Length: 324
Image (cartoon, rainbow, N blue to C red; front, side, top):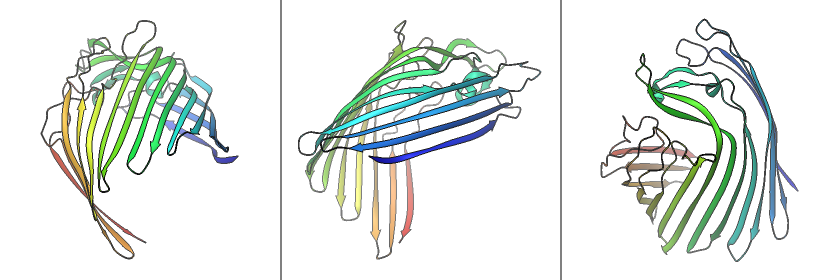
């Protein structure tokens, strides 16, 4: 057996100031965790656990009055196995049990949040989240082929999410959004294939999909990414690396109540770097040219997608100097 990690953490937080959405609140948290690995002849097993406690003590204010203090204690744990199969291949599977206490914002927020373009209303009576999930996948790595495909299924009891009501706050003119709870189900998959066309040329393919909804009604959860795919190349010549890539996203029409459809899009980018190596130093010039077609598109995960599309054509250069 190999022990890989264990420890604990503790912090204190207080929300203060006129712009704070939550009242002045003392937040005390403490956690203990461990992560262990067992190596066998034909498989490796990894498991871990975490116990944590969170205590919130809000201060009464003239506007909010007296709010209830809340205390949460719970345990999370996971176990995973990796089984080698053919040469360069393996099967992996993981089971996890998760516990999450509501955050300070989810419990006590009440007011305009310009960053999210929403008037947020918390719920001081929220319960803790409890989730159980399975991840499984297959992996392969060889000289000319790298492949990885994964699937997951999660069932989350009392899942907390921010739900737009469709109503507008008269004073701030922002959409009113409430923190709600419901039993949720997440399923999805992701895959990546890298094919060596030449020692210095690789074709990179990938895609992912998530389906999430409330169990009782089948209503899709808000801000879930659509089906996405990418096609790219990895080109190497001496110290030069180039990565042209096309990213495609389907329109998102599985919508929560009062949520709007997001159109699909295709964008093209080019990233890369140039390495100048010396005996005791390395100069690295990296660049990223994104959305080269200057496509107008919106991110379904964004709170402000109705008013702010994603960035247009752009170029970024970074210089890094390393010595040793």
